[in-house]
Amino acid sequence: MLRIQQLVQKQRTFFATGKTKELDFRKEQLLQLQQAIRKHEQELIDAMYADFRKPEFESFISEIGFVELELKLTLKNIENWVKPKPVKEALLNFPSRSYVYSSPYGINLIIGPWNYPINLLITPLLGAMAAGNCIILKPSEIAANTSAVIAKMIRETFDEEYVAAVEGGVETTQHLLAQRFDHIFFTGSTRVGQIIMKSAAEHLTPVTLELGGKSPAIVAEDADLELAARRITWGKFLNAGQTCVAPDYLLVHEQVKEELVQLITQCITDFYGDDPDKSPDFARIINDSHYERLSGLLRQGTIRTGGQTDAKQRYIAPTLLDQVDWEHPVMQEEIFGPILPVLSYSNLAEAIELVNRGENPLALYFFSSSRKKQQTVLRCTQFGGGCINDTVSHLVNPNLPFGGVGGSGVGSYHGKSSFNVFSHQKSVLHRGTWLDLPLRYPPYQNRLPLLRRLFKWL
Image 1 (tube, rainbow, N blue to C red):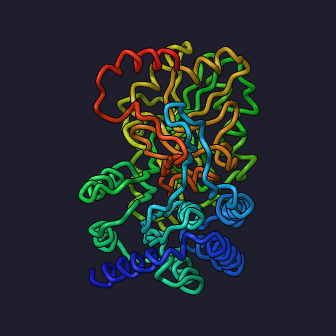
Image 2 (image 1 turned 180 degrees about the vertical axis):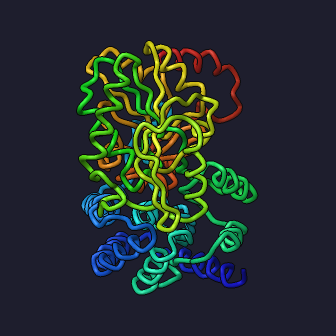
């Protein structure tokens, strides 16, 4: 506890020097982060494999490569991002000029999850650095091997008065949350997000919460079913389903349900072979408790494909689960694993009503060839982000803010949004001194009629 208190104070003292606000300093530190990631790339990939047998291809495309692209974008644009932005002036303030200044919050706590332990910790880190902050990172102890490599990389690269990594479990997180930070960024479950928000409220600390929820994949009867099957299978079983924006359940028109089930079954075989247990491209469940929870979800409903499990290696096969209803345990919580429940609907209005019953999902995916239906779904549902005729791929574009709404999160990041989320937008008016009209100063006397006419004219 004392060590954490001292670390926070050390960063607060360094932030007060103003060093982190210097543009050259920010760029230099971002370049050092870029070099550190490249230096430790294989260690990080090996660590993720040790934690949950994450395939190297997935480790690069969804972790290392993703962060590299964000870093390149940030380094290319940071000079423009930090400039004060002029805004249109109000005539009542003549003569004047108004600007919005992006000002760093100060000392930031970033708490990362275990499922994408590099991407979801380092992407917000580079946004916080670009915005001119000091940062304490808390990698997830669940992905212990990756946490250790990240902590080592951060120690080797940065002075802890600027960026520090603190390892530990729940008690360490509690000690961190007891401190006063200027901003907290958390990625994880809704339940823990509520705890984070309550702790932050003690100090009126602003928070960004990247949570989750039950993200639907809705398939209309006019969809390209073969394409939909491939893209749903990929998005669902990437990282063994341990993805916050993975399709959590399939809501398919009753006319094409059976055909789609068969197509997805074939895609699973095409992707992972007749026995996905032997595939080098299919990850494992992160720990025993998650494995037991997921295994329990297989005890009801009808398994259409998959369902095989192996506790020793924490393996659960890519599984389609049929004959479930909205009261089934698998539909009561975010699955976060390689189990895809299949439900049907008879018309689009019914599908929309079913989705809107629950909390706002982090993502929504709709497959249809009809632009009218696409617009109807977009207009009538509330969700964090998503895709039309694809899954997960909206995360790839750094120009799209990523975040939830309502129960799925607060705030968004990626690209310039990462810079913005760690910046206070400070509004400043520069007033000229060569003219000072007396209209606003007391005594007001009979000026109100003149003021009313002026406001009508404006």
